[in-house]
Every structure is written in structure tokens, then in C-alpha cells.
Image (cartoon, rainbow, N blue to C red; front, side, top):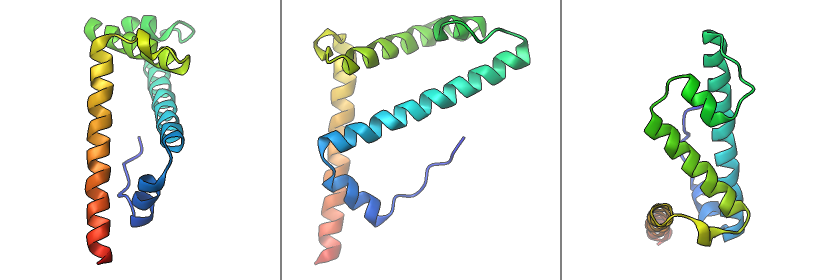
Length: 123
């Protein structure tokens, strides 16, 4: 697994100046990388246990005896991603909408704070 790298001044400024589409594109790529990492870990664990890998992800997680609540949560998030990708945000469960709103608020707050730091350094 890759360790997170410390953001550089340039990367912070690029994030502050990025359009909403650019931010969404980066977030989508991050999600896809996470899915690829999950898939690689699943295949490795399944191989170690002699289990097949050619089943739907939720069934595979159940075969590995993962927590049923965690499996339900993964399924819910996958469904939410597909709804968002299809432009069906209005079909998201209220608690998922709330979580997304809280995440967006936190990101905006962090970007505002970074902008304040950069502005102060420029003075």
C-alpha cells in the first residue's frame, strides 16, 4: 500500500485553483485506485485460502467471512457510486447524502484554511 505523500505548495495551489470537474476527476481516479487496491487484496487473500475470485465482490467478501454490516456498507456505497455516475443523485439514501455533504463541507473548509495560509505567506 502506498503511503500518502506530504502535499507541496504547488499541489495545494493546484487544488485551490482546480475546477469542480477537475476535482471530481481526481476524486474518481482516487476511488478507482482504491477499488484496484481492494481487488488486489481480495485476490491475494482468496488465493491464500483457496477461494474462487470470479464472483461478485459482496459475495467474495462474505466468503472471506467479513463483517456482514461492513459488507452491507460496501454494497450501499457501490450502489451510491453507480447512482452518482448515472446522474441519479436524487436516488441516494438520505444518510449517504448527509455524509457526502459533510465531506464536501470539510474539504471546502480545509481548502479555505489553506488559501488563508498561502495568502498570509504572500504578504
